Image 1 (cartoon, one colour):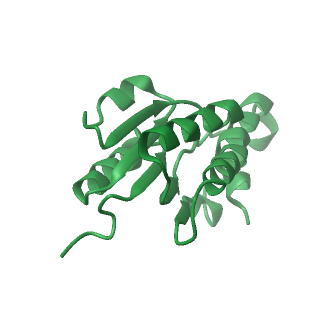
Image 2 (image 1 turned 90 degrees about the horizontal axis):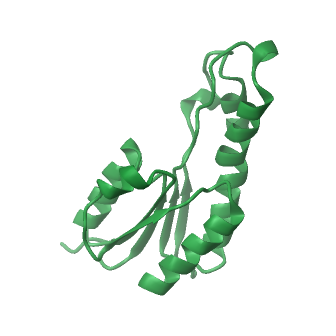
Image 3 (image 1 turned 45 degrees about the vertical axis):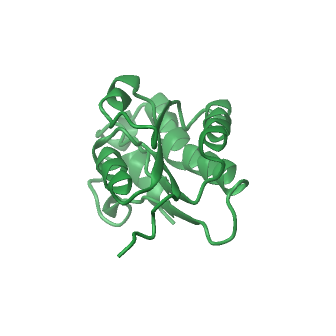
Amino acid sequence: MESQFKDKVVVITGGAGYFGSCAVKRFLGLGAKVAAFDLSEDALASLPATSDCLKISGNVADLSSVNDAVARIMSAFGRIDYLWNNAGYQGSICPTLTYSIDDFSRVMNINVTGMFSVLQACGKVMQPGSAIVNTASVAGIKCTPAMVAYRLGLCK
């Protein structure tokens, strides 16, 4: 039986992290072309070296980086069929009253604004029948109160 992902283009943010790298390998195994978008160039280097795996170092929290990544994907593969918005940052675990505003901003910039920026940039070039999956966490329902920014960024 042929895979539904054969020759499809899958974009994975956080593509060099644990879940992301597992997904990159799985989708490649199913015949997809994969664009792994991640902040860590070193981690991206550990992904499979194949013409079907485009490794893009960039920051989801930086709109120009996101737009450059989408342009590279379109240049390499000509389309985007699936987006897995998987990049995320947990932030500090500490009491609310001592939580750093800088860390709070970083969590929001990556987990909320970054997710939206990637969704919007990819969505503009995706065709009907494409799909977008945004990763969330059980921490949005139940987690330690000391995960202030992370939990707020997951609330619906």
